[in-house]
Amino acid sequence: MKTISFPRKIQKHLSKLKRAGKTVGLVPTMGALHGGHLSLIRRARRENDVVVVSVFVNPSQFGQGEDFRRYPRPFARDKKLCEKEKVDVIFNPPPQTMYPKGYLTYISVDRMSDVLCGKHRPGHFKGVATVVAKLFNIVQPDRAYFGLKDFQQARIIGRMTADLNVPVDVVTCPTVREKDGLAMSSRNVYLGKSQRKNSVLISEALHSAVDMVKCRKAKNADKIIEKVKKDIRRIAGARVDYVDICDPETLEKKTVAKPPFVILAAVRIGKTRLIDNVILLK
Ligand code: AMP
Image (tube, rainbow, N blue to C red; front, top):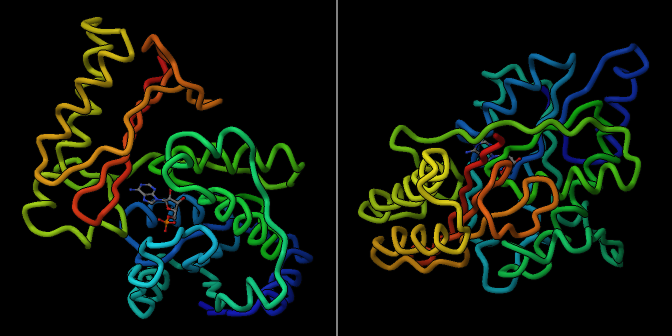
């Protein structure tokens, strides 16, 4: 496994492999790898000759007062995990390489970036779309892998890729959960013991909402949302940023919870912001 820190270097390394007809799969991450990341890496490993994992805590997607500085960066551990998964290249550029002095170019995906998490984290998806576009240009993968845990992000990247005619297949992968149902996240390590225990109520509330729809016990979106919020507020110190029921393609709000839909939530427990969602296609 190679660790490469500079765009030119990785471009040179991969162009040789591509000329030899190898396919390339990219898994963009911010590191602090867990089972969710590993599921993307394993899928990329199955579907491509060469697997590249980027490990980059992207400053442009963090707002003022967010956790950019304290975001976990256990790079030696990440490297070991990638080695074990037979990753070919880790790309870990220093921030000043990705955003050198004088940097001015950003990508924004209208409308879809202003709702849900975008409403609570202004500029976040502009940072995400920009860094992913940069990674696509640097790595020029055949396929890139994204988790549905970050549902809005996956849809925005899909939109951007289609809109800009980027020749990359965007592959989405299901959310991987802890045994009790909490969606795996690098931020889960911030949770104290009792916060961690209570955080399971988020996924439980979302799943029980979907069950209610499946059993035809409810379909009014506002009523379902209120019930989910009430359930989540049982977590001590929890503040709900949003719970919404949306169209899974456009992210537009739905008033009737008729499949296909996705129910999404963002919750702050103390200083930790957690997101989760459950999709019901039919
Ligand atoms: P991050 O390092 O948090 O930026 O995540 C990198 C990629 O891993 C993104 O595509 C995420 O959606 C994906 N990911 C994070 N957590 C999970 C999870 N629990 N299940 C599946 N994919 C995940």
